[in-house]
Length: 338
Image 1 (spheres, rainbow, N blue to C red):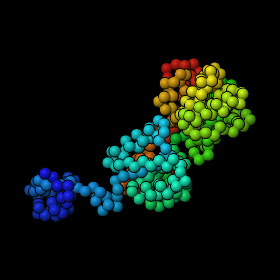
Image 2 (tube, rainbow, N blue to C red):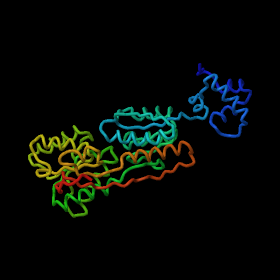
Image 3 (cartoon, helix red, strand yellow):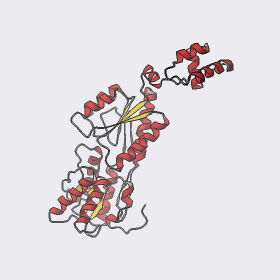
Image 4 (cartoon, rainbow, N blue to C red):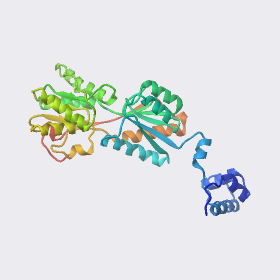
């Protein structure tokens, strides 16, 4: 029967070798004679020895774990991010600790406490303060995800501004629409802030009057329903509702259809992200496709590389490309979903 309390020192004593030799045999590295290897393996097999990974991590100052910090986990966007991040962590045999702050007042303190239990942390942009990010970076490697942090803290994000400007120009030029409504809160969200900037830039480039202030709501489907109700209660249906993400756009679609309006004949709706559901609704959603899983996978790669070799750390930002996806919800002919 195996003894989970057996230590490498005891195995070394039984086999008549050093602790370092036991380690070399177990890890399959270094030069060890066949006779010595046989004795060590027999002792390991007889006593069911397994290395104490926690003890090894503590001895090396490592936890074999990395942290991932989100404001919450609602919706498919976060699910895609987690899958992308874990795909890289699994290859490095690192566990992933996920912390959802729910944007509480003590969010900064929660994340600082997490840093004591992991080797590095990836933080979704806008989740904690820049001051907290700086404090984190003094404790463990940090990589920002889908947003930027203070100087010298690396970030991995998608291109937002140019893509949203392109989508907005499509509505303004190809469809001749005016008085577009933007749904999303630029305050506190780097992604939404950049998308709002792209929305405004398209108007500026075409010499059009500045757009109306955004309908400041969250990024979940109920927020989109609520935004649609607010817009429709004004008495004049906007020709287009440009949403900061697909979840909000899908909610707006529900809200508009529930009022008996038709999309896109009565009102155009667009999103951003290209979550799987966007291609399945009717009409399918015109949106901007961003590589959500690859964003998180790249953030994990950068974090794990720095954890393994601090000298490899770099403050450079990685910006992944995005693509406008034209479907039926903007009024273009409905064909096979791209």
